[in-house]
Amino acid sequence: MNNKKNRDRELRELLIKKKLGLLAEVKKAMGEKLDDDVRMTFDLLKDNPDKSVDELLKYVNARIIGNRSEEIDDIDSALNKLNEGMYGICEECGDDIPIKRLEVVPAALYCVPCQHEIDRKNNDEISRKDRSWIPVKDEYYLSEKE
Image 1: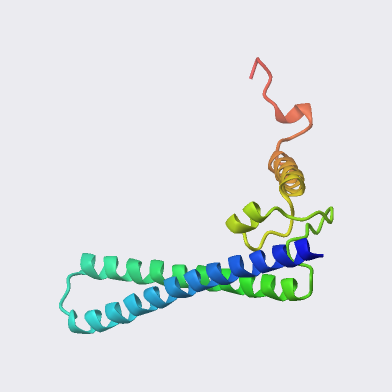
Image 2: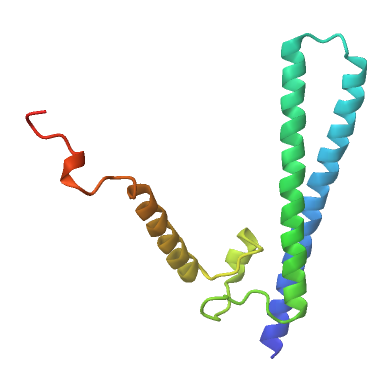
């Protein structure tokens, strides 16, 4: 039981540390976005290439903020699972997901072997769909004479 409490404490610390890092990234990106918006207000005389670059940077910044927000939501979900005693447990086999994996992918739902099996099945399914356009009947192929 003490081992479980230590693991839960370690996982909670990991998740909170990751969340704080993501929040700092979002805060920095939001500050840069505000700085860019203010600067663009005063740079109305820029030529089109400069405006295009600025627009691209705004788009990339918005995507970063969106991605980080999704990661924060995943971590909040993981913290809720941790409170329920369900975080860090593979949803496929029920084994503990190693902490090293959770450090890399805090929202991991599966242990590595189960994730590999799921990925393999998904790749097989995608591969079958990719091949589905290939005609099966001989009449679709050109003969050597044609």
